[in-house]
Length: 477
Ligand code: ADP
Image (cartoon, rainbow, N blue to C red):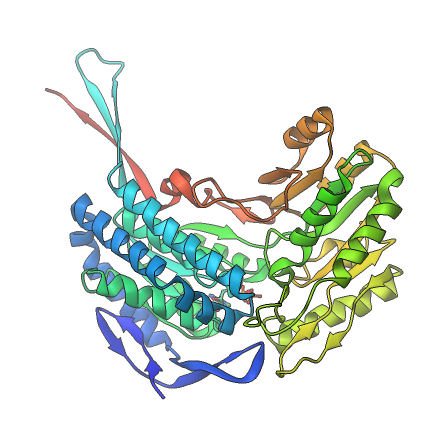
């Protein structure tokens, strides 16, 4: 079997390999991938440091054309790459292809941004003197990504890093090396000079930790759990390093009495259960006012009965498996906890068997949950959703904001007054009216508040904030 290797200083380098197994079918081995060491991580950082001076001064046409080539190849191979993603992560094939297309759009967007780099010239307070404000690349960027968006999250970190002239060491999540390898291979063949983009696959505690401990990384952009995010923050402060964190969510979706019922049910089903609920923007707290509560729960339960949980590659599948055994066990533990805490299990809750051996879980709905229960406060990261009954809009808003997190929030209402008030007063980074809480476009700012995020926003032109540093320069003519 081919071993997919790490890319360091433009060379594919081997090492011990580990099999990547499909969560839809544990007999399906997606591939064997090299497991990097701390030494590999340090060599990759040294290579990226050596490549930085030349790449940071490279022409915008070179950056544009490499990013553009990558976008074109990803689009041309969207079905094949989508299938790889579905196999290794467990998203359904349509979801996986859509994510692949999105990765291509991100490369396309930043190919364009490379041609639109600008600065400012402003008058100084001293007559006759002007001040130039320009953005310079940050340096060597460490990119550490999670398993739940195996191609889109790497794309939305790698594309801006390269566009603005940084060099990169990329460490993907252990469970999804396939998409990471594919994207690096595409960029390498698109003509990136050696050392500009390095790939070190392997474990967080070895490769990731070595990256955190290396003083030559100038910046780290991280998406993952709150616990690891804290480690990234502490290590970065020790090394005077710029960092950006995207972590958990416990996103609310408010449903008011005046909501369009069908629309609210569809938005809730999508927000809570699509992609197996494994999105940091998934809605896991449905906060529903009294007048519509029973109707909404009945209609949502009917909708859940029609969701087909099965192998990600089957055409009829609506919801793929949970990503691995450990995550499935965590979901099941939270389901038991919810019952102990006194929430009512209204639907699902059981592990299920399908034709292929995998990690299948029924979509699970709790009703009569309170916002103080641990199942309402902690991120479960699975297809497990709580309904919290409230009296009116004021209570709904207060419950929605009463959470340590603040990534995304939704409201289903036909009232302009409440929609407007909610957009203004939600303590989340992203707010959706009559739409699922997930699904932020690739060209607009992505990020949260409170324990969900730290540092500048990702995506779109906002990405420049993290990946560049502003230079203020004066000239006496
Ligand atoms: P999840 O629960 O989603 O797996 P993690 O935060 O553990 O969240 O993983 C997100 C990314 O962080 C992965 O690429 C993982 O390998 C990496 N990671 C885990 N532990 C560390 C660590 N100590 N240092 C650096 N990276 C780590």
